[in-house]
Image 1 (cartoon, one colour):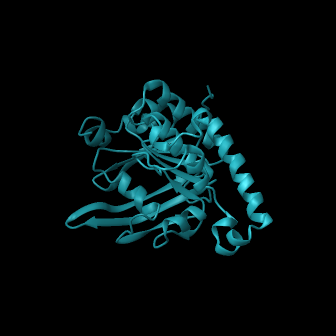
Image 2 (cartoon, one colour):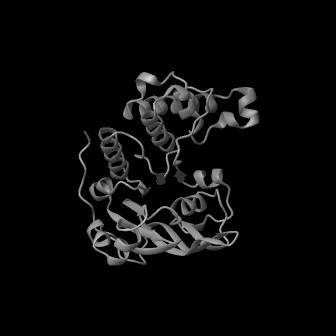
Image 3 (cartoon, helix red, strand yellow):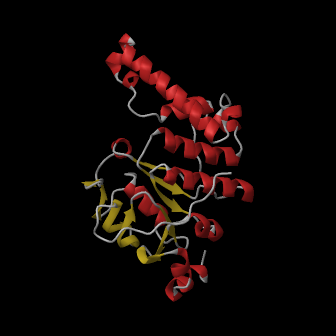
Length: 269
């Protein structure tokens, strides 16, 4: 079991320690305002939990950050670069990856092949290197193969590495989503309910793995409804409701916030 380090103090607002900044993001679907001027910063090298009732706009915001949806207004800054308007693959290349709420996979691929797909900087993906089979492409392929094997071992998927993704259990698919993100070698990872629907033991192991990812120097932003898990692993908590940032602070601070209790902890789930 990986030990969980205590939460660390956050950098002061306005410093260069922000990995990601959400600035006035708005998005409406028809007459429904899904995101209503969302603004907050994500501290670098920390695990930030994004919580709130269903319909608060959390997953929609993740999809905007990852380039799957384009907002009506606002900016999403990663290292000073505005991600709005960029394609998802361009955002991934800049160091930000998003997992999916429902684990996805290529049904005719094995776990190993699935991990290999998400390795970055593959010369063999370009036409000419693929045709001539250059040494650089072969070296990179070997590097990614070794990385995929290491990720599978780390996530206890080595024994199913040659299995089709469709043959995995729900929990194994959740672990594979984490592996997919790690293969892209990002600086920032958005995890959308990585422990949802798994047994308590695996949920605890996933929480430990997320803390280990942060300990490696990455930034993690997590959507999760399991408050016990959030209390145990989060450095900072941001609460959304009705498409807006409602409150933020430590877990204890947001738990004791009356507005949060009304909107989330004591309201609809």
